[in-house]
Image (cartoon, rainbow, N blue to C red; front, side):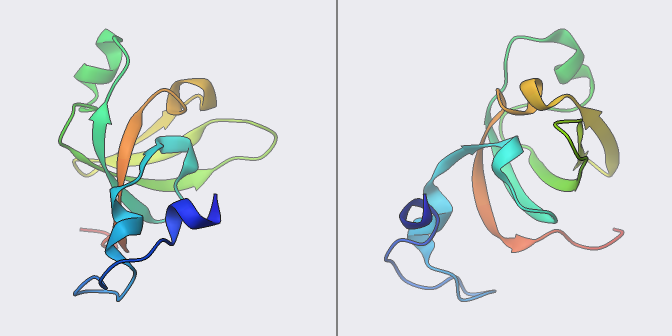
Length: 103
């Protein structure tokens, strides 16, 4: 797993992390706190689309509760709690830079 996140490649212009680590497909549940990602694929749930979870949108993981509870994601300026099983089905492409604070 370490090699998937921190592979070889040129550094990012903003944070100097390797570029190859930015191209790995992951799930929303795999992000660290305050990391962003671009949504690649969303399960066929009508509720997710209504909440703004669509391919191409930026999402940030704001909070992860203990004992397998929900995660809180920020998308389009709104915070949304999602169950872990649902968060594991949302595929994202990780961005290197942290979430902007309180946009």
